[in-house]
Image (cartoon, rainbow, N blue to C red; front, side, top):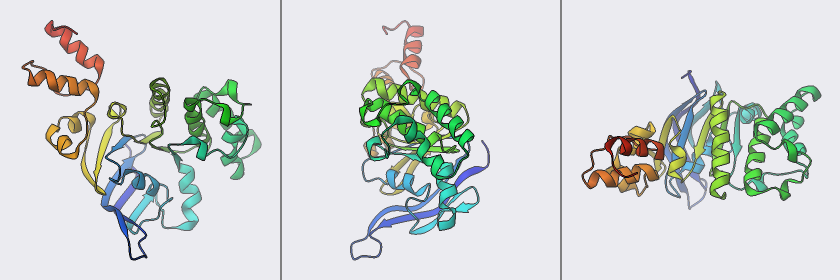
Length: 282
């Protein structure tokens, strides 16, 4: 991995901080995110994961501590446009992000407002539409797309800004399984092409491809590591009330019944392969 692209130092965030009813959401977070890293963030509702996501590009300024993107602080108002260009956000409900009535206009909206030259703008829009498989719908109204297509359009509009990092806050929560798989395949391709991905999700099977997982609890980092490291800590995950990926949960159950299986079986393919080697019914 490269040197940290995003650096978080002693970050705390409190909602209604200046009132008589403050609500602490993040407490003393220290974290770095490298260029090209795939980071997954999980935790129950209220754990602080969405608040953390919004701090990554300055949508929420720190109550205490600092967030740096490159060498620029999100506390610096003059740096927010370049920071938000580099760290793009995709939210759970794409409809709330759409501002135009044509798909290609939606993709062009951000870079056009930044004054990107016409030839470069055209190239970015075309590349984003092709990458997200939306080219044939480029002249459609975004409101007429399927939920999965809308999710990919929100990603396309962010890609047209030429970010170095894509932050997705529960972007698959409203999708059917087929649409979820489509979005996850897109994220995998983007990651392979060098884009950093920060994905917030409550679907444990979605975090298996990540380089690293952060588990949030009550505004703090309770656990972090590779998927194999995190999902090997059954007792901690049980205490936090978090599930295992389906294949890992099945493997755990089989071990409890006496079957000798190695740790770190996180995908159906891994599980079936090891069961086949043992001659067990798969």
